[in-house]
Image (tube, rainbow, N blue to C red):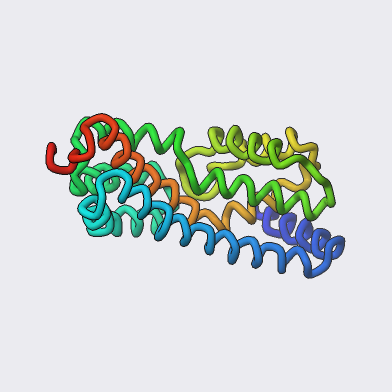
Length: 218
């Protein structure tokens, strides 16, 4: 492990020597564009979902209680660590106890908006880097399946997913550190979407199970 930083430095020296400064610019653009997409989801898409779930009252309750799990997600970069506060926030919003306690933990494993979008970004980064042209359906399909392999832990939880992407898309294994860097720079905003997406999902399930007045039935 003492020599690991040296090896990593040599890898990136070779990478930049091969692709030039464009690789660093690519990382920066990826982070900026991904952050914009996350903000659109966080402020607009999820607000629309809250309105669908229970109208203006649900939207107001949603924004009143969503800041705590949002801050936890950004601070820990772990969906698993955010489960307790996320369940509490869902209950405070008005979701029934049984729905909140079922949907949020299940969503941590199976519902990951941020990770799906992140997987698509990783694939497209390599597509442009290696100048390939896969179909949009292949990109979406691999992104969805690869997301199921992402574990709910901080940085490093997506290594299996990234290896899956490389093998299925036909990219060289030597590109793994590239995906690891992308995963690292988008980890916090991706976790934010994963966590808040589970909260809003519990509201939508509450609407389906308890009706449009589910907030008053708690």
